[in-house]
Length: 288
Image 1: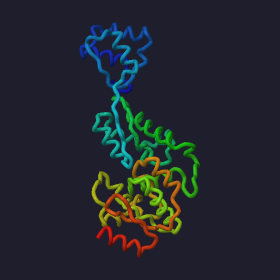
Image 2: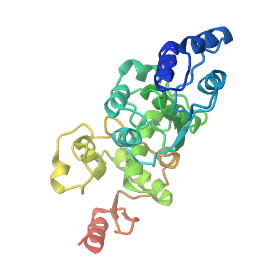
Image 3: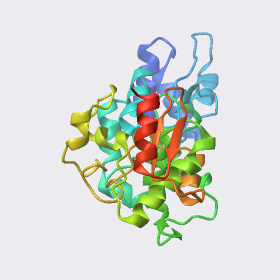
């Protein structure tokens, strides 16, 4: 049953599918019992052995079939839309249109031109027939439930606002999956900001090339883009992924280091350096 369907439409469909003997009686039963305005969108398991009253109780009760959906940390809103589309829960285009709707974003109190960064990675149980907006709202409400004592208007933690922390957290999330390294990567970004250096984070160079899942090439680093931190000063214009709480926490609470560089060790971890000479040696050791 789709969100927004009328009781009359549902009654007609149940009749057409052979689940009702009398559409008129079912409609009357719903009106008299006061349940006709209590339809629950979702997918139900119904059969021809059910009476009209049993059918009515199911479609107006809590017997909705739920689909388990896990959103991993670090996915973009495009990838989230694809997951939901593949499960048959939403139309991908409609979902993304809602992600960019300025009126909806204002309602959600997101200070950006998309919901990127606020679709909290978690496991959800979603009924089929849910609207894209109701699903987005669920994700965003989960985000704020994981951010205690944080208010979006004017919230500041040291040099970063909460929205800036989400942006930096999205970069940290894309750089590493190791929670133990997140505070170190955050320290590199904060140290670079203080010194007026560009952040030069590889994942930012390809965010707006979606769909893009390949290796970041040298040619990508020279692209003119409001996301590419090789080409701009400071943070990208929006988050580049949907980070988990540890990455956002790390953005707000960087470790105290002198590090300005890091390079992959090719095993999921990174080598950190305070000088360019050390960094160059690390590159030669781990990447060449």
